[in-house]
Figure 1 (cartoon, helix red, strand yellow):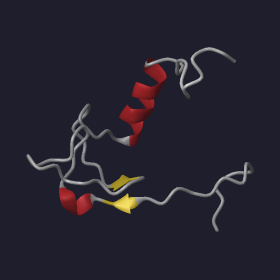
Figure 2: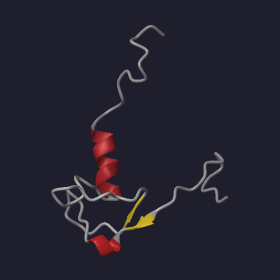
Figure 3: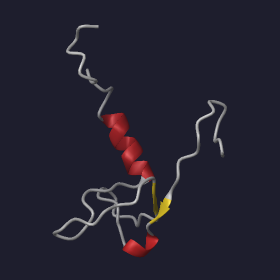
Amino acid sequence: MDYQNSNDRPQRQMFDVSSKGIKCEECKKPITELPFEPTEKEEGGYGRLYCYDCNKKRMRDRGPRGNFGGGRGRY
């Protein structure tokens, strides 16, 4: 198994999607790899997909995640 850093985290499998002609929703650059295999929707297209840089920016701009996990604030 390949490891990408000292945290012993396995490297994520990347799927080649260059033949699908997918473009980033934000910057419109072609997306050639994704960490999942996209499924085409019934109406065509793959939904909103973002390149690595735009997705990273979106995650940074949205701020920290709120209360999640179903704990209802009890802990």
